[in-house]
Image (cartoon, rainbow, N blue to C red; front, side, top):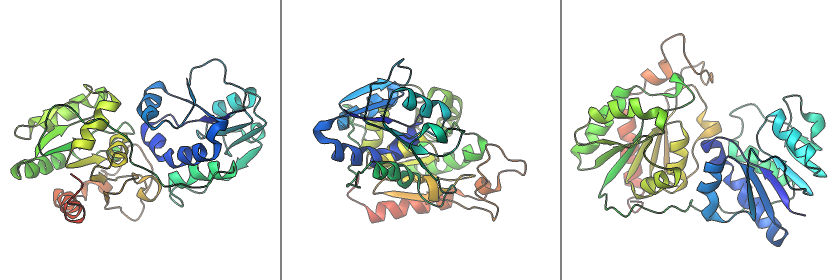
Length: 310
């Protein structure tokens, strides 16, 4: 029987689960791997050929498997694994779902271990071993972009993850002055903020909501640098090997720093951070303390450390 994996629902979480997937694929070999997850995320990872069959998370029935690895912490995902008839069901404790799992793992406090290590622990419980993590494949755009930078000023989580627009504009202007064209990117919901940021940077273009995930991955792969809030786009840029600067606010970089060979985190956390709040009652000091100079210093450090990455 194949091994079944219920993947995370969010882009960043999925990319941090890649070490788990690669480990499970290396273990299963010809036995086969079946994954369940959101269709756009499945399409993004399809070129890696990590599974033998993929089902959208809305599928009515999951195939019978000997082992089911459940990455999301929800009750519903554990329930679906239980109803699939899998003999072993591996996941994290909580959400009143422990009885549905045969292997209910304790989850450490947020930030004690990187999220990718938490997911990898599920694979290791199934018998897998960690393997090297390659870059995520991405098709670069046919259009020659020259030296370009990707700015990502959006974040679905909430205002406590969004560095002020003025900071992105200042960084974008500094990059433009160096001869680097600026593309401001994000999902459809990020379009208003992306358009405002692009309007403040000479020659910048907003592509928010105009690209698929695969197309966005290609843009990041072709970019000289990506500067992003702690969002899915930061994880995507890092995964394809782009130099990536990620601005952290209320969340923990120890828990969710993007995985990649050329990543720098900018964080000016007060003593009470990370609080993991979506909004802030005291004026977002974790973000307002970050200056454009801090971000540009991280950009320069990446260029100096990895001149071959462009």
